[in-house]
Image (tube, rainbow, N blue to C red):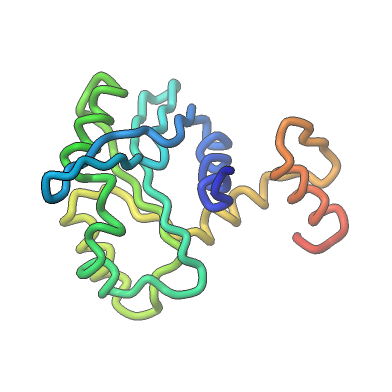
Length: 165
């Protein structure tokens, strides 16, 4: 079953003209024990040759504060581990790609510090989930059928019955 957060993010990038590959698998070894992990998305825009890997952290019940970026390294930064970067390089056939982190929302204080830490870790872009929601919802038309996507069809119905603007 697809994670609804990842589904929203996938649609967001597709609407922006990207091809999206989900769950790019790689192996990590911790304490001599191999385990499988994945990069949530590898995206590629054919028009401008933009490539990126994307990690989605949809913790919607709380704000992501400075401590998340300082203390939750394994939970947030797995997708930029050397093993993940190596797998993404093989997938894209280049090591020239961006790293994007999607989070639920930043806490109201110290946003600039959070962004600075993320950049120092090698992440090129930090996107808050409300930006993605707004982008997708704004582009769904209430008078158009989305036969290939139950997800977009649900948003269409919510808009058609004035639950979403």
